[in-house]
Image (cartoon, rainbow, N blue to C red; front, side, top):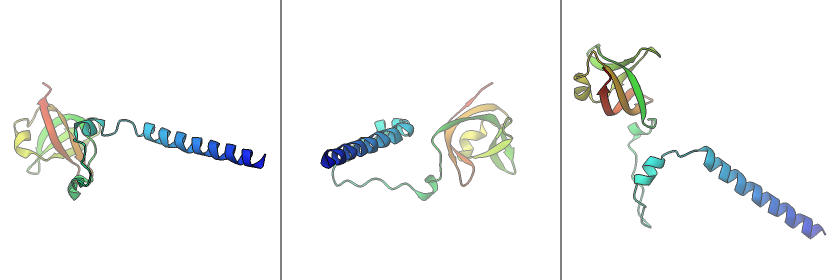
Length: 124
């Protein structure tokens, strides 16, 4: 009888562990799903590419809207809602949008408050 109870408890514990692990993966969502689907599968023994240290402090790609202005010699995106200013990493690309409302898609560098531009388009 004791052996049966122990086996039932072990089975319940194993089920709980599997359920918790499954839920933890589900809560992470499809984080990097677009990246994971576009990456090639690694071959056995192949090392993962190292991420440069300045890229380790960035968020996933997001969309930012605001007006592109020149501020202290730098071209920045000013968000009128949050009152935040973001440095734009591709100054030549952003220069043609000075004074215009734009939508910028890119990754925000958390350590420098810089948007690493993927795309930038005028809204007006």
